[in-house]
Amino acid sequence: METAVKIPLRKPKLLDQVRITLRTNHYSKKTEESYTSWIKQFIIFNNKIHPDLLGENEIRNFINHLAVNKHVSASTQNQALQGILYLYKKVLKKRDWLDKRD
Image (tube, rainbow, N blue to C red; front, side, top):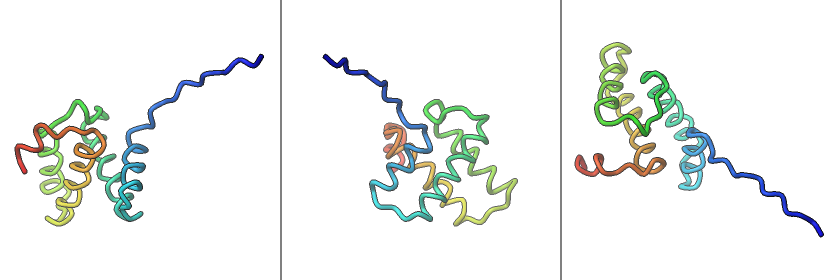
């Protein structure tokens, strides 16, 4: 009699979850690269704190940092914001404080 070996399934890392979600929703490869890059920069800007523990103020601070310190254009700020919002809405499923703003 064979014994079934149970291998614990690990949840994919956060950026892998983002990639999987983007691919499932048929986003382009360029969008995937852009969003994951902005999400990674957002996490690094916030001292590698998991985005689950961050919120509206940290997002605002990051976008302000891009504008004031990095001198990026408004369209680039918007692209960064859309990537971060995608993370919160589609991957982390954190809509409570986001829906109040829509």
